[in-house]
Amino acid sequence: MLCALAAIPILIAVAVRVSSAVPAGRGPAFLDRIAQNGLFVGVTAMVVSVPLFLPLTVGVVAGDTIAGEAGQGTLRYLLVAPAGRIRLLIVKYAGAAVFVIVAPLVVALTGAGIGAALFPVGPVTLLSGDTIGTGEAMVRLLLIAAYLAVSLLGLSAIGLFISTLTDVPVGAMAATVVLSVVAQVLDALPQLEWLHPWLFSHYWLDFGDLLRQPVSWDSLAANALLQGGYVAVFGALAYGRFITKDVLS
Image (cartoon, rainbow, N blue to C red; front, side):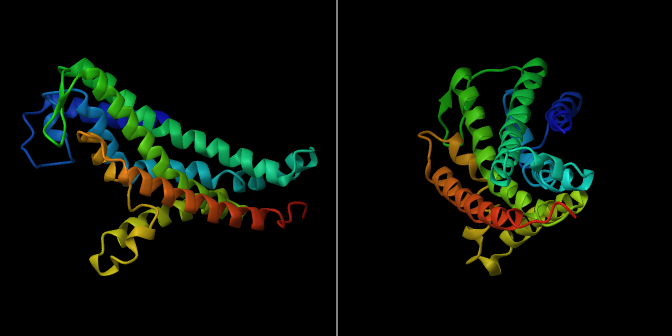
C-alpha cells in the first residue's frame, strides 16, 4: 500500500512532464505550479491523496488490526501469552498509528524526489505571497505530512473499534472506508454546517495554513484536539468491546 501511495506523486509528475502547460485553476490545487517548482509535486499529491487514497489505506490497516487476527484464528493464541487484552489493543493501535505517520511521509518525500528529478527546484512562493528557500520549503512539506498524520489518527481509532466488532477483516475495512466517505459528504453539505466541526474529516484539507507566512497554527491545534477526542472516545469503545469479546469459541 505504501508503494501504491508512492505511485501517486510519480504519476502526477510524469503526467505534467509529458503534457503541455496546465491551465491555471484546472485540476487539483498547486497542479499548475509543478512545472515551475518540483516541490509542489509533493503538495499536489497530498491534496489528491487526502479524500480517498490515504483514508482507504488507513481503513485497510486499522480494520485489520483485531478482525484480521480473529479471522485467521490467531487471536486466541495471542491472548494465551501473558500479554493481556489491553496491551494487545494498545500495540495494535500503535502499529496502525505508525502506518498513519509513514503514509503521508512517503507521499511527500516521493513527490519531492520525483519533482526534483523532473522539474527545477528553487524558492517557493507561499499562499501569502512570501517567498521561502528550498530548505524551509522542505520543512513545510514535512509539516504538511505531519498534519495529515494527525488528521488520520481519528479514523484509525474508528477502524480499531470496528475491528473489535467482527471477525471478518474485509467488513471492518469496508466499514471504516465508507465512514470516511460519509463524513466527507456530510462535511460538504452547507445544510449541516452545525455538524461540520465535529466531523473527523473537517480539517483534513486545512493544511494550507502551513503554506503562509507566518504559519497559522489554529487549524492544526483544532485538528489535533478533534482527533484526540476521536481517539479517546473510540479507543474507550474498542477497550469496552474487546475486554468482553469472546475469542475462545
